[in-house]
Length: 160
Image (cartoon, rainbow, N blue to C red; front, side):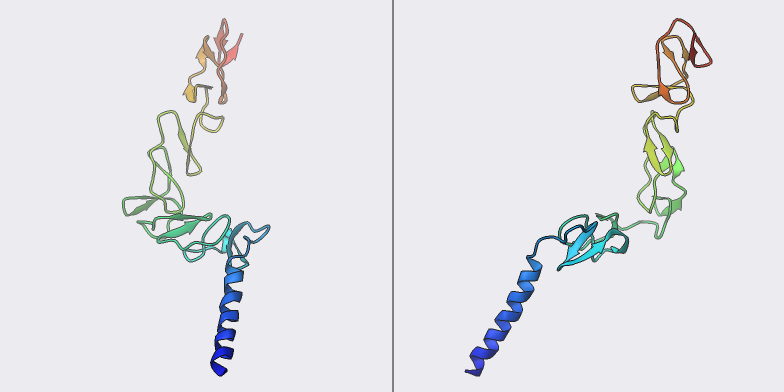
């Protein structure tokens, strides 16, 4: 009889844990769910990582709810060029938070650690097809990173 009582209590305990694990994801959780407990993005680490649903374990590091490989240059605010941490704000070495540095495509510039295509932040002339142009030609006239316009005469990036 004692054996059945012990087995019954064990089954109830296991069943209760299973119910919690199978419960729907935490409602209104901006992060992942660990057995009914919300783990927000700001508190996540490699043991508890995710943006929705159950938390996952990362083999590297967790950034903004996504598993990333371990950083090759340690704790770095910029980006990793090999095993060296660099600022991450140049067009040839762009990045943040210890990710590998990226070289921006020719039509993009590094702005705040991210490659950004032609925009007011990256272009003094005008933007045409994602490429920054001088903005001084009649067929490609403009300034301040606005879209290029075609006109008869272009003076200082302004159609006349």
